[in-house]
Image (cartoon, rainbow over all chains, first blue to last red; front, side, top):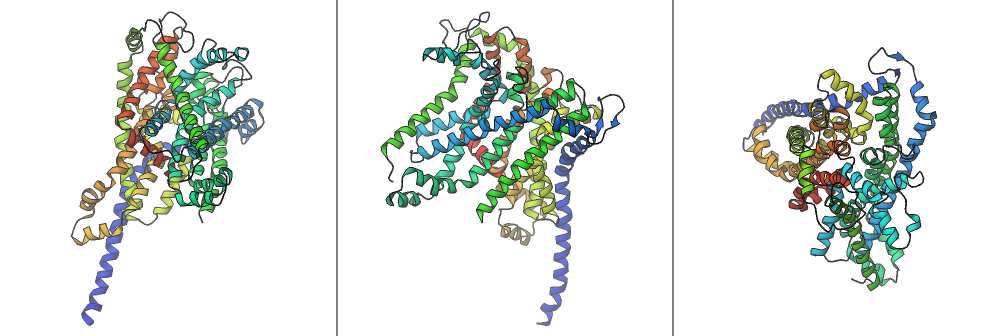
Length: 307
Length: 274
């Protein structure tokens, strides 16, 4: 008895020493990642915040201007217009893909996991693999005056609608938005289909025996069962919509006029073409806050639903 | 299972429609690429005399070898380093559960939602200060840092689910921490690491904003970033522009078709965890 009690004290001390060693080793392992992150994300973020309080052309002396750049971001019609455009894009990047994905996944959930379904999944995933810039090139050509969209409209007797879609003030923004829908619908469909596959089949059988129609089945079983996937997709696609750059840069450069101007492109222009580094930095910070303000509530909603 | 016949039919028709709509722009690129280079093609029409030579010309005019080499160099620098340091950090945060792990994790997670556009201005002046501006390093270094939030989060999610008994058993057998990591933890982490490899490869290969802003010479960019150069180069020839763009996306599509199961699984997991 006595021998065990005396030996347990040094053993505990040894365990504590081992834990300290593990802590030290652990911190050494975290260090490289932390250094990379600190140097190329946190540090630039801090300098960005610093720049945003100055008037600076990138070369000469910088003048402290306080909140002036932020006031410009929140009052200048061009900058506000870009923010408004990016909210319009949310409809095309989030609502259309997630909505289509939901409908498709619900309708084909009973489809056998055969070769046809797998081939369809592969095709629907292709837009995820190619660069967004390439999607921009492909669709610029689709939307051209002599392109496939007008050709199809002419063929089905809707030729009066034909126009150069990306050059028309009224259609440029929706047309660019539909490129986003094209890119994201496949991802949403496949992810939601996987999610639906995890819902207990007996729930569906029970509610059908209950005499429920497809609508009640959708509301009471499918939607709650996909809560997690929906939260993820809404977050992901909203970030994609608000930070669009590649597609617009390649297809419209923000035009015609300012019809498709978005924050990402405007930051690039203000910062590098107009050399107003302070204003561009302030816009970048506002954009980050905007994304956070939209994404955090969704994450919180999804968590509350879990409990 | 009870499902109505109409539902099944509507579902398949819609799925077929989605597949066709996904393919049209890509097929349309191919049909345009095969038209005579000096003429403006008309919509989606298969050429009577396919000009496969357009691909050869686009390949040469576009300096595709050099572009692919530049892209490959950026990928080869970014992906292994990001994998290595993220795996080590993920193990420390998830496996060793060091003191302060929670705070470090929160710090990384905050980075998940920062749009690259918000950092691009300071990254430009940082690269200027470091003297890396207009070299591939201007993209390589920041990308490693920018990939850390997701990569560390991803690897930690794996290590945190490895049963603790495993490492205790190894310790009892007298294995050092390093031996345990290399012989037990790493082999178990291989699926997580390979999925992360796929994601990082795609994200680097397709990266557009950083190369466009930080590397002035398009030939030193990633292939995605060089697409702007193609636009300028083939401004007058839609067939050549489409041929060039196709050449650039085909390697990624081939890699995708070979590893598609892993790809789809990685992207789906990546979406859910991210």
